[in-house]
Amino acid sequence: MVLTDLPFERSSLIHNRYSLLRRPDSAPVPIGEDSGKKKTSKEYAAFLKEHERKAGLDGFVDSNKYSHSYMVKKDKDKERARSSSENRASVVHLKARVEKDKKDYDRRIKIIEDHMWQHKQEERELKRTEGDIVKNQRAVRQTLRDYENAITKKRMEEEKKLNTGLEKYTKLQREQTHKKEDILKQRTEKGIIKLQQNKSLGRKVTLKSSDIARKYHTKLSDLELKRIEVMRLSQEFENKMRQKEEEQYRLKAELAELAIALNMESQKGRVFKYDADRESRKEKVTRINEDLTTDQSVESKLAKSEGDTKTAELNKRKLSADMLLTRSHLSIKQRDEQRHLTDTQMRLADNSNVQRQLNEAAFHAEMDLKARQIDQKVEVVSHNAWALFLQVLYHLNHKYTRLKQISSCLVPLKSLT
Image (cartoon, rainbow, N blue to C red; front, side, top):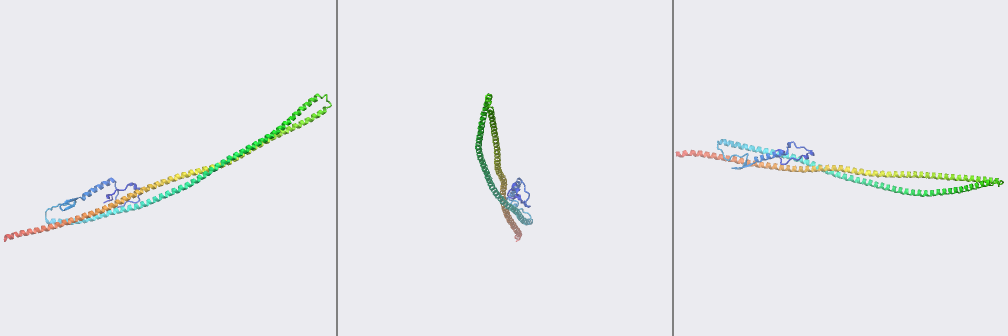
């Protein structure tokens, strides 16, 4: 009896990738399923043929042990010697068969126990592996939950920073807009006032220049009239020439003073205009510098706020990417653990089936041993009964022969009498 004769099939090869235990040395090398099935069917047919029961005159006997029900009458001594030797041989053969069946049973039980021990060890390993896998899956789920909570917390912090940066950016823009509007309003009012002042001063200078020019033209007209009058009355008013010349000289002096005053006022107007233009240009340069400084400051603040916003957005995207990557890795690991757990559970189920089949094989082996023992006992009883029958028959034949001899001896005596 070998392992392939046991009433169960070999386990699938898919479970050999996690196997750590080897087959026992007592088991032969496994063969294919088709050849195993053919061999099993042949051995089963041979088994049925071997244990076929046939009916004889003395009852049911084994087919291999079937003998003729009639006796061939030969030499009595040879028949008796052959019967006694056959009885002794059959008893020895029965004892040998009992010992052989016991050895076969012990060997089968030993193989079954070895396989049962191996599968028990494998079951313990698989249970331990299943526990480790469940523990690893629980740890993976806890790690994923903690990581998701941490990522969610960090994302909330980054969103809070982003909202703070956006609020700060909006506040800076609003303050800058209000400040620009106030500065523009102040500058407009100041420019209007300055323009009105400049126009007022220019108007005064223009009025004064116009008055002096009018006086100048008036004096020039008077001078022309006086000169004409002097030329006309030079002869008539010869005595008054010097007086007129003095008046003319005085008028020329006044004219020169007026010209100087006009020139001075014009110079003052040009200087004032130059100063006003210079102050205006200076004020424009100052305003431009202030605007540039303010714009640069605001732009730097906005750039910083935009940088913080971009940093927060980048951190948020990075956290999302890390979350996706970690979740994918953990999902792959969890899928592998689940696949390993499924394989382990399948192997446990197969192991349970194999153990059940081994228990059934042990039960069948025990039942086969009991059946063989019963058959052997029946055969022993049959042999003993047959030996007793031969012995009784021998004694009867012996008595019959003696009686026949006695009767043959008594016949001559009767004849003599």
